[in-house]
Length: 429
Image 1 (cartoon, rainbow, N blue to C red):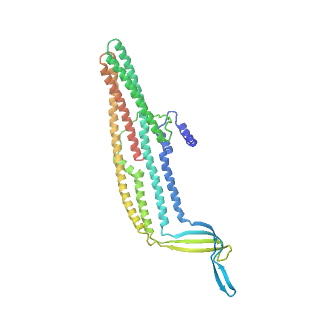
Image 2: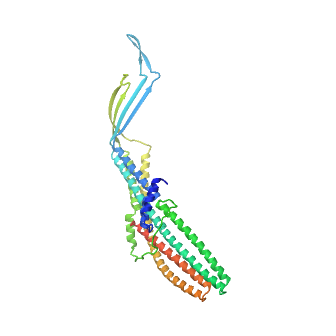
Image 3: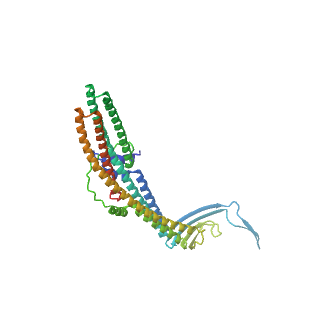
């Protein structure tokens, strides 16, 4: 890693509070440091350079040419004169030519302005593409960030499950030694403990993978260790979302919709440019030359010429006509693409809202189930220790409690992600 990148990373890590990285801080870092987004930023800068290049048509073009020609054999001819035969050379062995040319289009029937407008549209399209990439990045970040949060909590749940299994094994060991349970119960408790240790390792491995994915989105090296501090519990607010209002807001703010409009406008401009290419161009051409020989005299001298040139395109093999047909088709494609984008956004917002409401209902059920499972486990533990229920019954109840914990955790994760994606989809984040 280059020193400059390491220095930026060091500053960002030092800026993270000791309590850990929050989702808002992660968004800020990702929007600055994500590598894919930096590519989009460079595309914008390339489009800016193209726009500046389009201004060149409004300025004169200046060229300088210099050449030296050595004639090994100078053509000659003989001429009979009263004084006798004279030999006359048709040139000189050494020839120097220096020319400074200035070309400036005086009148192009608006071609230069249309070309500049096309470049402006190109820049606008790249800016909108950058905004689209930011939305995609924030969606991925919400999924990965809350995945890390859930994985951390999952590690805690898996660790607590190991502790419960160890506690259960101790109880079973005592009961086995007293002859109150069979060896089958004892081996079953040992096997259960090993299975939970395996689950713990799997969950821990998933957490590490989630951290790596988060580092990629943040623009950090994969092995960077950044602590994530986020409350797993969330304040469940009443559902006040209105589908039509969400769709209206998304269609108003989403860069994809604006991009489709810009593509349509660019296609129209390209079509206009092809029609303008049928019209003539008037240009001024000025030349200043300093040559030797000059005017058939083997001496240095200069010459100045000024020309007003009219260029009329007459026939180019039907290429302009075919280009016009192509741009007309491109315009039709842009209209269809625009309708598809709008319908796609409507479907996306609707599906996200359905996911959010479903996740909210599931979380409500998961919370009730978790509370019931926790109480059931507490009662089962007491009854098992007193010998009122079998080891198998106790194990089934405890497994149900652990399943309820993971279900509740997954419900919170789904609800967080759905809520974040709704806000991102209507571009309020």
